[in-house]
Length: 291
Ligand code: GLN
Image (cartoon, rainbow, N blue to C red; front, side, top):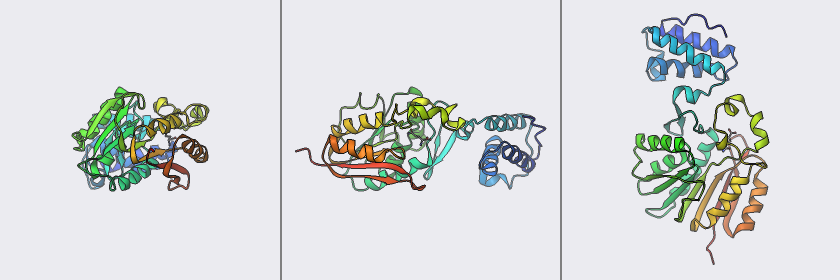
């Protein structure tokens, strides 16, 4: 792509970035231009428009480079190094799954349930990635203890950084574990956003996802629910009586997973809820007493 010269004036550089991003078909070109330009200038996006300084040579080169990469489908969150999640900001590194808006719905449900848990309750986040769910839950109640597991060292480092920056490192224990393999305790709440995309659908995902995000965070096996089924099965022996399991799932997986979960144990409550786009997205189960 022919880039042209990046103007030195901040307002014009922003306009330049917007024009480029719009031309390559980025869905929210102004928002992204604003975020990328602010990142380069080192200012808050809310203050960029009022800024009447100039970009030096290095900043102009960086802006050109970031806009070029974004035009090649490199995810915005990796370019910026952060993503907004609920009411806070998470750092994100290439190689670590980028938290999605639909997972905010899972976090909100988990926060609502967290309010009903006993003092000092234990929470488990399976496949924590950036630590989004673990941190979101720890932030609402200082007495909760959260164990967050992942197989990826890269993810665990990123989650550590997020827990540290957001001031919940004393509540969140990060542990390397393949699902429940290194988990022996029981919990009052288990949350998970595991890989649930059917293997065959991965190559057909937008290139932004399939080229750049870690496949192991997406690939849920042939039918997409392989890991979800393993998690549901293991969760039963890791939940306190009356404890909750909250899973993010894919659209069309609800009925099969409900059937599977019912076959595994007794639930006091078991249901699928929908995301804001009206798609099946959350499986919620409250474990009955183990009689
Ligand atoms: N909703 C995700 C996506 O396709 C899939 C997340 C997952 O597999 N956990 O972007």
